[in-house]
Amino acid sequence: MAYVISSACIDVTDQSCVSVCPVDCIYEGDRKLYVNPNECIDCGACEAVCPVTAIYLSTRLPEEERLHAEDNARFFAEPLPGRDEPLGDPGDSVAVGRIGVDTELVRRLAEGGAS
Amino acid sequence: MTPRVCWVVGAGPAGMYATQAILRSLEDVHVVLADRRRVPFGLGRFGIAPDHPKMRRVVTPLERIVEDDRVTFIGGVEVSAARLAELAPGFDAVVIASGAGADHPTDLGDTLASREVFGWYNADHGVDTARVEEALGADREVVVVGGGNVSIDIVRLLAVGEDRLRATDLPERVVDVLVARPRRPVHLVVRSAASELKFSAPMITELVHELGLRVRVRRHESYWGGSSDSPSDERRSSLELAVSGDDLDVDVVIHLGAQAARAADGAIEISSTVDGGSLVRLAEATVITAIGYGPGALMTDLRAAPSWPENAYVCGWAGNGAKGVLGTNKADALRIVEQIREGLAPGDSRRLDPAAAVAAVRSLADDPVGIEEWRATVDAEILEATRTGRGVERIRLQPGADGLQFGTERKESLPWPT
Image 1: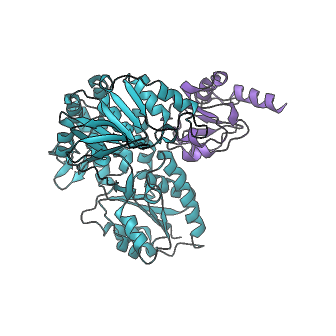
Image 2: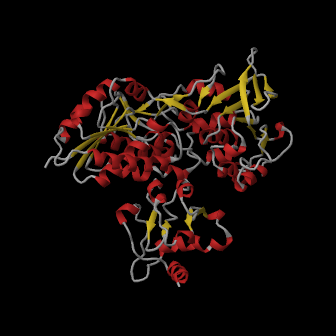
Image 3: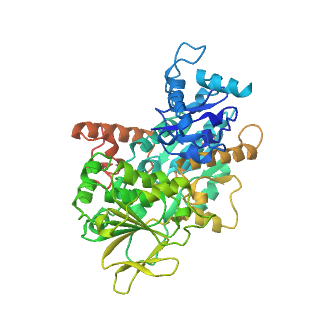
């Protein structure tokens, strides 16, 4: 299952979710945050504090946001644009810090929103 | 340069997150992490439902914190308010993360407290196993009182069948007792209306959808149809999917807007909080109370003392009562460490050096244990799991006088690994 951060997070990246995540599994890309589905323990703390209701359990995502379940996983499983290696499961988003890159999908959505 | 020294009282989730936040935000610091228990992690180790394996992974990051070179874990430390106030000036900051106290008392007569029940099924130490097993093993209904996640955890474990139970991290002994229980509906009595429920909607959905339990929700409140307090769509749908019909045909009956009382003849009566009308009468029932916890003794005494130690901060349930989920404590820890930073005197620490700080806290315990004993405990759990072919999550050892003691699951001890 795992929780998923959907498009409402783009250009908001409020980080309330990061401070309540007990396993530090919410990572900061460039203009969006991502939940590592392998590290998430389904506790739901993030969902409750998100100011823009961007976070859903994967099974409860609204239809139009379904693609973000796969995209959150892709952020970790596939090399990000400009990188050779995937991020993988570092187990500590605070130690990793801001990554500064988004997935292709999020980059497209973010640019589309800005134009 | 002398490092800052912090004393974190309590190595449960709140204390662990406070330690983590201190390590992350103070440059040169040493944390003395003390717990009353002889093992770290408190309810992280002994409070998370054993049928929620993903949630139980919450301790993984905590294992790294307790192993950090800048942390000294000391177990078996019982600290009084007076001793805390006496030692506090030796530290740059003291974080009180001692957790909540005992279950709130009720006027229901002889009941099991939620702490006894989840302590028992989590293989905790110091639980009166025989008392819990006698009460749960009897051929009686079980009534769980309380509307939080703890009460739902207990209901779920009492209601699911053997196959499910065997697949959890429950100790075999616990599974055997639960399986031997006669199949009777479990009653959950919740004062709140549906709109005010503290447990999350997914907890009810799980009972019905994932576990296939037959759940009946009986609403005794008068909220329905009101606009301001009608449940959210999500909550409504999770309540609607529960079945209607006779109570006897279901596994769980959830009474909302209801209260329980013990009649003169010992029977348990469940009645409406709206009009007091009697709803169910059970001639004999085991009652489990899960209606929250009072403050712990340390906090009660500290608050009653004439002055509060100026560098002491309260984190997690010790201060707020049992509220929110695990992650709530983490946000609380970040907030407190921000206050600590602001309260620190500039320049070097003029307090105890780390070795003296460790010695001062160790002196509070008759028989302190440290990280070496914890590592030996973890190794022995793995060894025991391998030897017996059981999951390591089912074994909860702690260092004792005559070796490594099991929790509620077994009486004998294991010899110290050599």
